[in-house]
Length: 134
Image: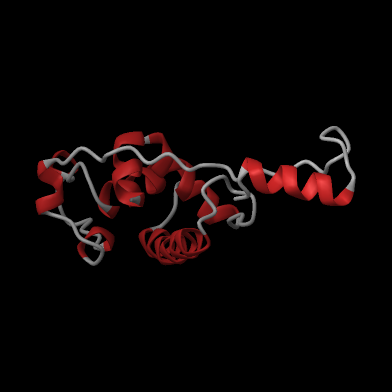
């Protein structure tokens, strides 16, 4: 980023007044807040989060990971288990591309309909979504 002295030197060399000088775009600063640690971090990593266990009883569904997400989608959209698992694979790819492109404000990437439904179900659970996407 140009220092004030550099800008003034440029203006005098080009005979421009400050009002005539082109506006410099300032980069949007991304503010990162510390992620509070929790016991859930002991149970999940990049590999284990995506494992789905639908064999557990409804009362025993773990509160974190892909299992509750898939369970919510099956209930909300009346999906079959196989379909929900396929959408989960696509959702995982979508999030990986989103992270790679740093498209946090959804300016570049948009998911297909089924992946968007799963994404919305994930966002509803803000605490887990925040942790899962970091």
